[in-house]
Image (cartoon, rainbow, N blue to C red; front, side, top):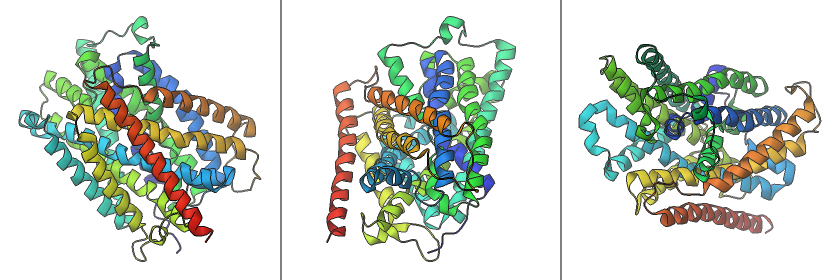
Amino acid sequence: MQLRRSLGPVDAVLFFVVAGSNLQWVAAAAAAGPSSLVVWLIGCLAMFVPLSIAVVFLSSHYPDEGGLYVWSKRAFGPFAGFITGWTYWASNLPYLPALLYFAAGNALFIAGSRGRVLSASPLYFIAVALGGLTLATLLNVYGLRIGKWLTNVGGVARWSATLLLMTLGAIAWWRFGSATHLTVAALRPGLQIKDLIFWSVIAFAWTGPEAIAFMGGEIQRPRRTIPIALAIAAPLIAAIYIAGTLSLLVAAVPHDINPSSGVMDGVSRLASRFGWSALTPFVALLVALSCFGSVGAWLGAVARIPFVAGIDRYLPDAFGRMHPRWGSPVAALVTQAAIAALFIFLGQGGSSVSGAYDVLVSSTVIITLLPFLFLFASALKLRGAARSAREIRIPGGAATISVAACIGLATTSVAIVFAGFPAADDPNKTLAVVKVIGLTVLMLAAGLAIYARGRRKALG
């Protein structure tokens, strides 16, 4: 069926904001200390810039539905395409619950002190995660013309929440000074194991620009819209990460910042100092909405992977069909929502709320970064592809693409290695490692089994 061009330039900008940033990484960075400000800049140069160059180049040459699934398939064949798409799709299964856990933790601030009693309640976090997942799935089932509004609201909410945090931080710094001493020595990044683990999270945080390409067939003038929207969104994403982290460091010292609720802790502290406590529930609502917007964006984007895989006959035929009225891959959306719901319970098993959150994040980082090896390798392989008059020209041409791809490959490889290490304060490090490795191996094995079955079916 002919796909509807539902996403315009403004939709694309807001999609990049919610897909390319997340306030949970702001809290994690602030908890790591002032050196995270420098690490953000390094991560931008080592991951975001190379990734953006690769995405603009590849989406300009191959703008249709499928994104990195199609790119990898063109560069290295059907198996590479499938395993790239599979690992990217699978990464969202633990990522969505982690994101919804973060939303639930920050939403507690809407009820003020009354909400704190639920902060250690697994039932509360599971209920909020399932509710948010259901909402995002239903809206996406009705197609991008409806589903995009959750993403758009999330993008506006994320930028608004960050702007309020930045404003509070700037006023507090001017009137009271910073709670964290920002010295040259404090800004120097460390090279201990715990620091390198953190670097892998930052590398992951800078991903996201590639997601919109999965919906290339539903973007108005994708060759032009994608690079322009990314150029507009990039400084907004950088401000969310760097200025947001700085504002939290102004509000509190790093060891008092909770990675899962640090943003709202910081807002609450700053607002209370000015007697503006009524602002806290409002910002909490914005943060929660921004997370739901991210869930909606990722559900809608990655559902196009099983859709393309269904067309290629690796999955049942239902995955390769769009709904005749709503233009959405219903089978893919419902399936990934059901599996993500299962991960909500699996991540909680045998862990505290904090432990479940850490396991979900670590699993997400490793599984998500694996397909980036193929993405950067595809850019390197296809850099000499035939040009057309409609494509976006990369300054420096093939040389720029080659340098960007090599930097991206190196960054991704190092980040994967260190992402598997457990957090220093995890009470059961062995269980955490087993969960992270187990979830990763399980997803890869499942993908290999599905590919093998699909090939046997195709060969008759």
